[in-house]
Image (cartoon, rainbow, N blue to C red; front, side):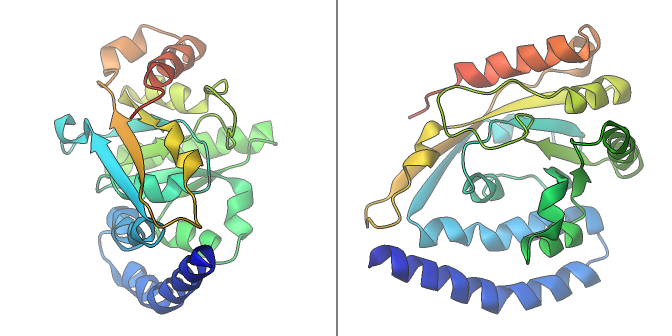
Length: 232
């Protein structure tokens, strides 16, 4: 019963907010901040589902500098956890299949988020070049889930190397982010709150990024994120 009420509230929330948000995003002159605006609206989903997000480390990140945020990916609710902390001037890199999902695909497009087709190497390279241009032209930060898919099991899956190639080629730093495994323990049919932690670790600055190849960098970043699990 509780779960039904929550899902009904979610549907009502989306029906009411989505049209107004679309108009706002279309008219907003600062397009690179569109995702931040959308996140400010949809972080309320955490309240609907009784999720308390505990953020750490984000206040220590230097403002105005582009970074590549690299996070582990465990559930569909990760997007709403990220919405609680996503900095202005940041876009998400999503897999191509999300482009065609009703509402989700349109929202991603309106927020200026970028898509990558991992099944097609040539298209993937083209997408990576588009992402690189976004970083340089608009001083944009990027948020990626380099596992490439949700990982409902223990630990962190191997990272794909695309984001780390961009970091090396563009000479920008990486911020490892750990989302706690309690995100998988959200119980929709329970009134009690679920606490989920999201932690930004110390940045891997550009000089250290340049000292490793993409695979080494992916492995190093994955280790930092893995060492943050589990988080209370």
